[in-house]
Image 1 (tube, one colour):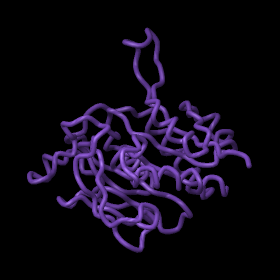
Image 2 (image 1 turned 135 degrees about the vertical axis):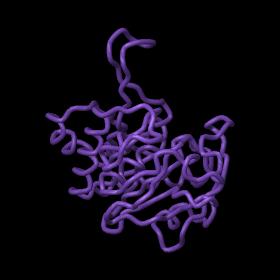
Image 3 (image 1 turned 60 degrees about the vertical axis):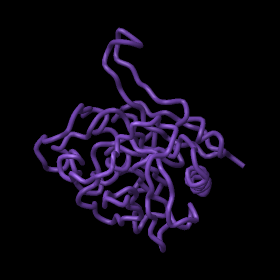
Length: 237
């Protein structure tokens, strides 16, 4: 059986450190977690002219996170708490996300990718959790990213619940922003105990999930279940 090709978005960096010229970047575990469950990771360079060709090649899409924030202008807000912005990347990710929604290709939004999915569907973000919720958990965890730091309550009667087979899971956490207003067609499938939205899914798509943590580290059984199920869903397309 042909292995599914999983498009995976890249981060873009300015000259310096790795190269004197602009460069793309991605952590290895994003790619190898896809390979582990039978998919072929296909990193996506940021090209509007090639977007139609990209869609014709990929069977599913992972929208990755990164050390940056989505420009609040994309969701009708002024900059208040947002940090590093990468408009070229965000423009491309919104376009490729909407194309996958239109063609019903499986989508997994990871951390900032969950936030991107919400914005692509017309939602908004909390620009800084600590500024808006003084009693919030430490969502930018102090311990290493390959360890868990807090729990997420998973709603029953959701696709995510059916996948992870549990109403409570432990997750790693590396974000200072979060979903505020939900985008059209999206529902909440998971919350942390401080009320922050930790996972969403689309009501009308066959497979479209966003999570605020990083399952590509494959720390827990739930992480493994999620990555495996996503790749399997792309096999059907």
